[in-house]
Image 1 (cartoon, rainbow over the protein chains, first blue to last red):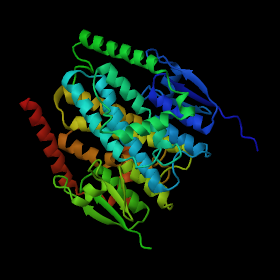
Image 2: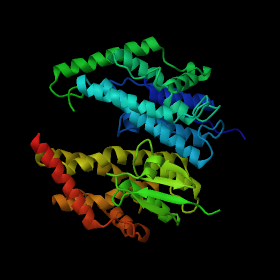
Image 3: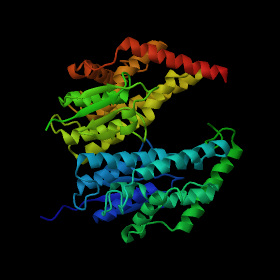
Image 4: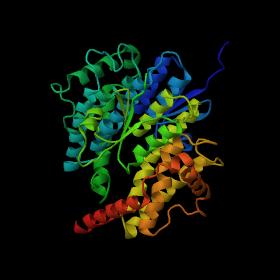
Length: 236
Length: 224
């Protein structure tokens, strides 16, 4: 029986790694979708309608129903299109995957993003926190496995492994060190294994463009801080 | 084979309480290990080396951490009395609101506890706004899960327990029955459920704990 025409639309932003991870999931499942690029400085009525709480991308629309938060969107995709499973079947392995994806998002990516909005001592604190947690993240990777779960790409890989590329950009823009080649070899190898997968590589935004975008973005943040007394850059 | 099920918790952790609720609803037998977080046991550090926190559920020697992750594990392992909706879209919505509860609502309620004067007024306004968003999710239902308690009820359960305690300590009203008719009704229904009722930590102990927390924070602010 031929499936009904599924209407899948992704509202995204080209430089967002969270949008990228959803694109990866859609790609791995071979799902056709329409893409709408957002101007984050002038958000569309559609975005504000479907994500009134956070007003953020990605938003996945499936037959008109909005899915929010990249990790939950990826799980939704996995549960709705059951071929090429992204999460393991075993509940304990699933719990491990959810745990590490959550840890990476909250404890590694969170401080990395925060560092971008900070200067001086506050920034140093965020960078230190991110580094410590990256080391812990590495401890969650099992020796000898190409991807998080083994030989097949899965949930944690697409939810997290883009972090290697973005960390390098943060390092360059802020002139800080996040990823230590000597201290985190397994982490670096894992990042590489994932982003080198051809199907995923072709979705990556161009590194130079990404770098220029983030340099501009950082300049905007610094300029805003210099104009105003209190801002995310100078506040606690 | 006998199941070995152990829960590491503290007497007051609302996150650990979620796991207690889930285990009770599923009718599961388990051993409780009460932790003193100022002096963590070797077992806790072994089972949760990453965060070193409670709750940790140990099932046949395998440790699962993070309360919301544990809830999903319990629901997927023991299929009676399902907690999460079956429909993937409803499931995604439940996960979204549980995360909102932990990230936005929890901290906004906490901010009310640790502030006073104008700062507290602003904190209250923010908390009320977040509570309104939660209430909207209930619509006309008895529970977030529908007719029976589910994942999102358990995830929000701490509000039914702790908000009234904070209101008592600070002599103010956050969840007014007139302004929050649906949420108030839910809090009563949830708290009165026989399974949930038997698990609440001692109220007087919680009052003392949060009173102390408030005083300590305000003292710190004053001394800065």
